[in-house]
Length: 425
Ligand code: UD1
Image 1 (tube, rainbow, N blue to C red):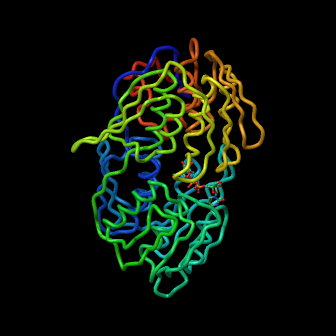
Image 2: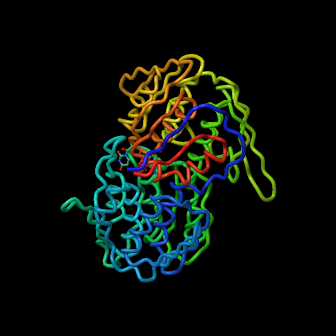
Image 3: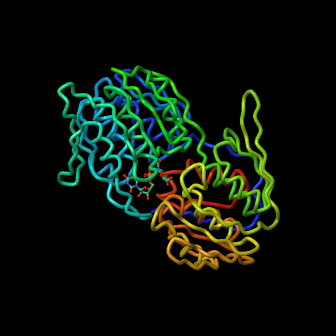
C-alpha cells in the first residue's frame, strides 16, 4: 500500500485551487438516475469515491462519459436497479442510489453499507422515509429490498420526520420525492450546503423544491425530470483542511475557487486562533486569503449539524490544537467513534486525554515525526496537517483513505512549499 512521507518545517505560502465538493458530487451523480435525459456536470472532483460511484451507476445501465472534471450521465438505458455489496462496502454513500432507483424504477436492491471505522452509521431513517412514501422495504441477505406498492408504480408524497439530522438521509428522500405522486415535506432536514447544491441541480432538472437550506423542505412531485447542466459547488472540507495546513505552519496562502460563505463556523474558530482571513469575490473568481501567526491559540470546538462546526473538520482541528498555545476541549456529537486519529497524534507527541466523546488537549511546543496509520478519510488529513510541523519525517500509512476524498493532495501541498512525497508500495 502507498504511503506518504511528510518532512516537517517551513511555512506554506502561495495559491491553491480547491476542487469540487465530494459530498455534493456523490448525491448529484445519483440524481442522474431520476431522468431519461443526460445530466452534464462540471467541477466534479477526480477522486476514488467518484470513480466508485460512476462504476456503480454504469453497472445499472447508466452511460457515463468522463473527461477530467466534466461528467455526462445518461440514464435512458437504466435497466438494473441493483447496488452490489462489492461496491457499496468501499463507499457508504452508495446508499444514495436507493431513493432515486425506487422513484424511477419502482424497485431497488441496495446492499446494506455496514459499519465503518467512525461508527455504526445505520440507514434506518432512509428506510423509514421510503416506507412512509408507500414503499415496501425489507432486508434480505444483507440487501435493502424496496418496492413501490401502488399500482401506479410511483411513490406517494408524505410528511417525513427524521429522528436525527441526517445529510444523506435528507438527500435520498428529497430525490425520491421528486417523482412521487403529490407533496412531500421533510421535517428536521439537514441544512448542509451540499443539500442545497443537490436541490439546485434537481430544480434545474425540473423538480419543484422549496426550503432547501432550512430544516423544512417541500417537494411537489412531477411526472418526470429532464436533462440539465450543473456545476458542483467547491469542497468546503478541502477548503478547511488547507486553511488548517496554512494555519499550523504560520503560513500565508490564497485558496482559489472557494468561499468563506460555506464555512463560517470553521473560519470563526481560525480567527479565534489568531489567523487573519478574508474572502474576495470578483466577477470571475472567488477566493480566500489566510495569514497565520507564528503560533496559534488553542480553540475549543463542538461538532454538530450545519451551520455548527462540521464533524469532518474535527480531526484537522485536533492537529492544530496539538501545537497551539493553551488547552482545548473537543466534543464530537455526530459519530460515536471518531477519535482514532488522537492515538496517532499521540504517537507524534500530542498531549490528548479522551473521555467518551470529549478530548482535552494541551498544546505542546513541538511534535516529532513517527510512523502513523490513517484510519479514515479526515483522520488521514489531520495526520498530513500535523506532519507539516513535526520534526523530521512522518510516515503516513494506509493513505487509500486520503485518495477517496482529496484530489492530488501531495501535488497541491508541494506547490505551497510542503515537503511531502508518495512512496509507492
Ligand atoms: C454525511 C457526509 C459525511 C459527514 C456526515 C455528517 C456525505 C457523503 N457524507 O454522512 O462526510 O461526516 O454527513 O456531517 O455527505 N444516522 C442514523 N440513521 C440513519 C442516518 C444517520 O442513526 O438512517 C446517524 C449516523 O449514524 C450519525 C448521524 O445520524 O450518527 C448523522 O449521520 P448522517 O448525517 O446521516 O451522515 P452521512 O449522511 O452518512
